[in-house]
Image (cartoon, rainbow over all chains, first blue to last red):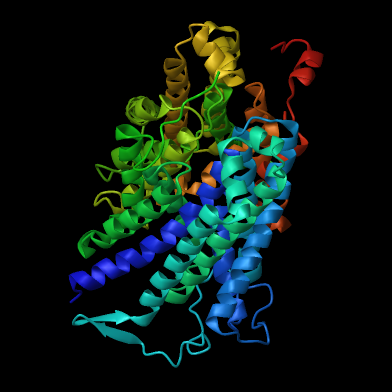
Length: 312
Length: 287
């Protein structure tokens, strides 16, 4: 019997991951006004990189069956390196799918299409390399072996990994917010988000800020993928796509371009999903999109978004 | 080589390409084509397997299903399009992705759509693929003729104006929401009736027919063929449906290939294969 506390904590844990994905969208949206549809694929990539860095082996349907890295890193290092790897590929996506269109001054709609293409290529390359099968993370190798399987909290048994997941995503979200708020480069990013032309006139290298946004956004997606892989499993290369799509719903729910909106939206979405009774679990995947439609009809600017005014 | 079976799939691909093209001609990215295609196919599968008669189905009954599917998808498109198309920019793309997921989950979970396995034994109105070739070929020709007429009409020109500058066209007195909605509904109806034909031709129907992959594939049709004229998505649909079948060894690389088309197409060939300049040279097809 799952207690309410367990349900809420599970919801908050997956909500934290949704917030990571939505923040990734938000960073890029605020500086460029576009959505990076490759975000879900970077999420998958982060999961697989974490798996390999923890010493996991490629399954029988992969390109190199039985191959694995000859190392088994502690989980925190694996997560960090996997996030950096996803961030690097995020930069590559920017170079191929966004930069040429931006330089040409093409309509922003086109970058939706190219980033979708980048995501499709990435996910299918992952599938060629790793096979379509699901992967469970190597037990013990995760460096978590010395931690207890579950904790007793307020009379409820809670999986340690869920607590860890919530803590890590909260840490990532908090440090990102602090960085945006206080640091010099964070302020530069907010300036570019406000007005790229003025920011450039003030001596901010806005191209560098854009690249930084793609790096951070890719890292957030990769971290989310690694965390979900550790706490649940990798359900095939497409598993990140569904998180990417739900992240979009969270983005609209919180308000496009709003950092606190992405965080609140993620938590609301995670809790709403966790509260769906198990008899109706088949419908759980549709909930995010039902919420998305409701927001578009009732309040298109989202929970915490600003109403967009247009200059003509 | 190209046999009649492949030809049917190519023509259905071209019809779906047209369905993605119509909103794009008004500057809107809709990824909802697989959702409406799935609704049409599911409707046909449900209706024609009702009485468990394996005897078959008449052509008239299939046309009746197509009309029903057209009505249903048009209603659904209005329901989705009305709130979303008031907004500009990326909202339609996001909302249509959501629609694809909702329809897929609904078909998977509803008690009467056969779950993951789907619906089997959908009767065939034609005994030979040739019948499907002629029927869907006729439909494609009719759609092509309509699109050709559209491009010269007030509606078509309004769509082109919105595509170039939505704000300016609104200032010019074009009812932008209504024009965008018309294009979106037309796209939905076309995908819905294509779904009806596909369900009968394929004999079985399940939730995977309307997955996100179909959105990628059909988008690749339009990007490769070009979205400046209706001929672009038709050529793109015909070519890209035939290509993986003709290049059997490619196998698993099919989606990588389609992904590369939509990743690199807008960067390297912004106008696709069928460009306005090419049409100009062909003379008769002056846009």
